[in-house]
Amino acid sequence: MPGNLTLDSLKDAAIKGEIDTVMVAGVDMQGRLIGKRFHVQNFLDTAWQETHCCNYLLATDMEMNTVQGYASTSWQAGYGDYVMKADLATLRVIPWLEGTALVLCDLLDHHSHHPVPHSPRAVLQRQVARAKAMGFEAMMATELEFYLFANSYESLRDGYQRTGQLRDLQPISAHNEDYAMFQTTKEEEVMRALRNGLYAAGIPVECSKGEADAGQEEINIRYSDALDTADNHVITKQATKEIAWSKGRSVTFMAKYDHRRAGSSSHVHQSLWTDGKPAFQDTTDPHGMSATMKHFLAGQLAHIADITAFLAPYVNSYKRFTVGMFAPTKAVWSRDNRTAGFRVCGEGTKGVRVECRIGGADLNPYMAMAALLAAGLDGIERKLPLEPEMQGDLYQSDSAPLPRTLRDAAARMHASAMLRAAFGEDVIDHYHHAALWEVAEHDRVVTDFELSRLMERV
Ligand code: ADP
Image (tube, rainbow, N blue to C red; front, side):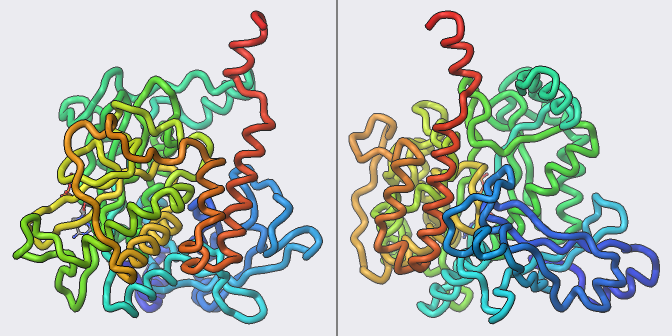
């Protein structure tokens, strides 16, 4: 479901004094909302047509460092502007912020007004268009996990400033709360506000649930076309942080915030449809899977190492891939088996679909879904055969493991002819550079682990 406001209804809401602020936001390489807040009158007068932002926004790291070495922008190139072009189909009320609406933007070249090729929304739009040209609509859902902490962001920051360490994180619950109805009752101040806030913002929430460790939560949004799902995903993350913050709590979408606890994932459910009919279903097949679905899944299995950097984009992401914690370690497929990297769900129904369980909650949903689509569509184009299903405890399977580090995954991404053809040479070089920077920063910085292990005893 896209946004729930038109320009006319925004005008009415402005006249009635219900909305005074419009957040105008693009999406950066990390999948964060970046932009400006407009007075509603200025938005209605001019900014709805276009506004501008510095083009370094698609060339920074998490810390907003001006990373050099990108072909697209640099100090040398003077860090010019991008056009932020509002996608009015995404205009919506943000009920958890007083008097506020939100619109998502496409980022365009300042001079040509062409989409910026490495803009995450543009990367996904291109793969969606490719699927359309092949006769498919890509329908996807992301199941987002995160940790909810009793601490406020402010108290954590104070502690950090005092000690230089983020040590006092206190999960909202004391025990594993997987499916737990009593413990999650205690968390309703945040989670009910989140479900209802998103729903009223036009985001079709299905449910939330407790997850498999203390303080861990999951929120599910109904599947939709891939672009809409990615939009819903980034707004849901923003909402979760804002609502938790407004209640004096904090959350994290890190893939692995503590090595002793379960990681947080973002499983991606995927199906293709043609003229409103499920292109993945074949009622004559023993598992109800069409040839199209088998080729799609075969493509994803064949290219999984190439696309892993988009499912696990940080050094930390790889710490989630541990045996026996419901996060996969092997790129194999199975039906209804949570130890496999790819699980076939909805067998025998028209909702038959591929669930990719490899991505972490830290993924950028536009890049992850675009990479999954590119791999799957390549499988369809080349009619790749699907290997036999694996069964049992797949942690023990002798299939090729996933890349173990971001360094390995970045090298696979860089060498991938499939990704270079699908995303474009410049886009792959751009994201490869970003991945190498993450690795280099991690190599450079001395961590708490090293200090506590070595300081006294080395
Ligand atoms: P659970 O795994 O909790 O039982 P479901 O299997 O019902 O939940 O659905 C998991 C996710 O898959 C939901 O977000 C749902 O919207 C999504 N989903 C359902 N059908 C499809 C489909 N045909 N294509 C893509 N996603 C789907």
